[in-house]
Length: 311
Image 1 (cartoon, one colour):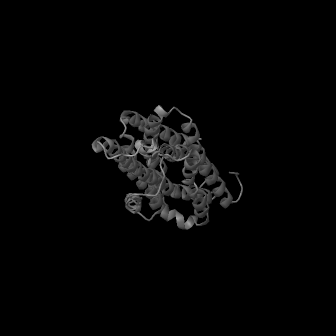
Image 2 (spheres, rainbow, N blue to C red):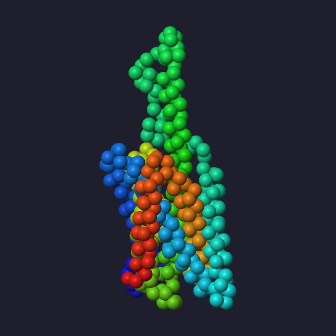
Image 3 (spheres, helix red, strand yellow):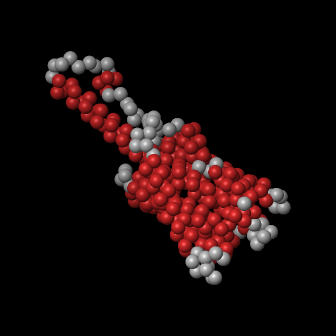
């Protein structure tokens, strides 16, 4: 971000920063992969709680509150903006509905290879062949192993769906964030300032750091290699430079639509947090740890969003 440069370039550089910080957060998966195996589930559950707190706080301070302000200022929703809740409420519900429809479209048995999800039964590993004698003793362990494998595969498939929904929610909420940054730079000199646009880009980028981590770490825990988990984690931020430039190009058109877009992202995040992430974080006996992770994540995001407004 260089003051005085072309607005389109400014928007691109600002959203490039937000994407870069998403990738930096996703890169933390390499440190997670080196951690103690016994502590990984606790780290994962805490990170899911932390991501929930970040997303809840970001939904209000980064998306809903700015959406209400924009709706009040454009003059389309009442003389004093008293109906600004209308486009924000509609966008919020549409965001949740979009994630719900996305969930229904996700295949129940995606062709994903998870670690140990299709492990070979022990008696086949050892090269043992049933002879027919004392069948009940020979078959029973194998049956139990197959049932355990099926249950493990089903659990991992459900976990994959939750992670995919998280990736979808973070990606679609990055679209209005990119638009917001692009519009902010497009408005410089037309009621907006370079400083406010710069601070918005920094704020969006900082909140993207734990979001990248929240995608890559669960993927690693589900059996993906750290490199693949990193690539998927940073992928959620790719849309921001694209829509940042688009927002700067069509600022006049995007501004009336911005309340809907911002609330859309908030609705998508809140739906995923309540319906998927929090239940996932409660499954392994670390519910209280996940709850504190939510509290910490909310406070961190609140400090970042509110504090940067005064820089």
